[in-house]
Length: 57
Image 1 (cartoon, rainbow, N blue to C red):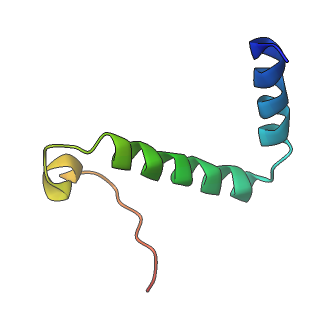
Image 2 (cartoon, helix red, strand yellow):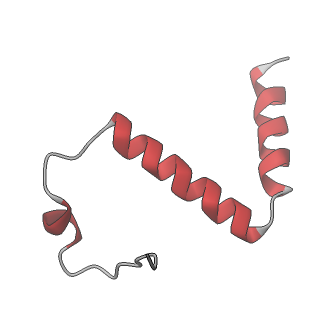
């Protein structure tokens, strides 16, 4: 399988997901990136003045 074929396959799979599933996949990817490349500043410093969604506990 070529790189172009692989990318097309992954894109097709992603577009087959519902909107909610795509959003969850985006959040999971964001978490993985943050674990691999942690920020040097604190959460409060990075999010000052931003709109933040919080999950109910």
